[in-house]
Structure formats: C-alpha cells, structure tokens
Length: 66
Image (cartoon, rainbow, N blue to C red; front, top):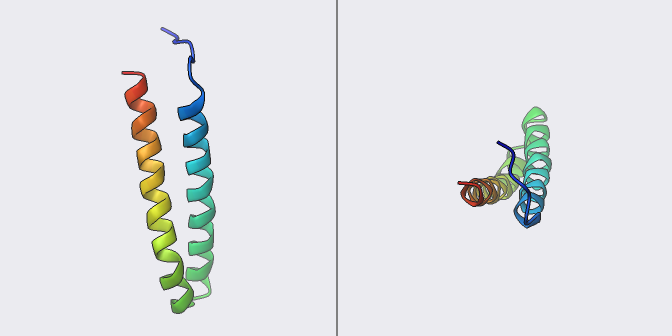
C-alpha cells in the first residue's frame, strides 16, 4: 500500500541529517587514516552529534507513517 506524502518536511530533515552525518563520518575516517589523535578528538563530538541528529530524524520519519 502506497501512502501519499502530505508533508515533505520530515524527508527533507532526514536528508539534511544524513548528509551532515556522512560528511562528519568521512572527516573522522580521514583523520583516523592519518592517525592524527588531536584531529580525531576534535571531530568525535561532531560525529556523535550528527549521529544523534540522524537518529532523531529517522525516528520522526518513522513515527509519521505508523
């Protein structure tokens, strides 16, 4: 059963959160590859925050269509 998308806001929020998380993850991985501990420690909170943001956006999107 297909559902009509009545509000694109949650989808846009999820896409924005996913993009932010993906960028943070790439920066963190690059810092890990060059083994720069200071940079890793600097980027870890940003990655954690982006992950929480993505989880919240995913939860909101799932709750909208239950």
